[in-house]
Amino acid sequence: MENHKLGRAPNFTGACIVMFGVNLAWVLLFLFAVYGLVAAVFLGLVVNHWVTWVEHRRRMAEQAHARPPAG
Image 1 (cartoon, rainbow, N blue to C red):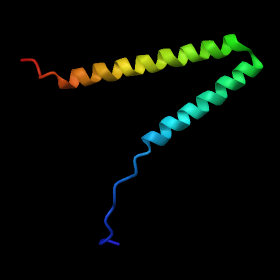
Image 2: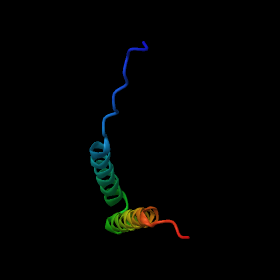
Image 3: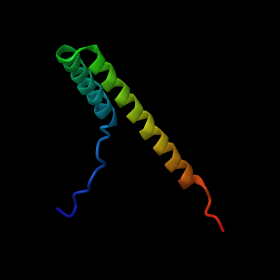
Image 4: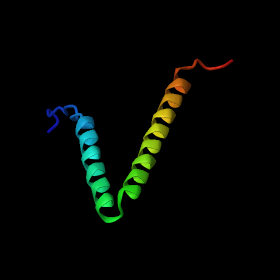
């Protein structure tokens, strides 16, 4: 067992993004069928705002790590 080398884990980022889209699509279709267009559009706007917020925070974190230490 000590001779067994561990390999790298597969990258599932693409699969995660695709499944996020699939799940978002069925949730929006369900909301549209049960509550109508207003609820589906509202949830779409909320998700859009959340994704934009996450992207903004990611960029701010990258900028904070890229700056040289003060002093």
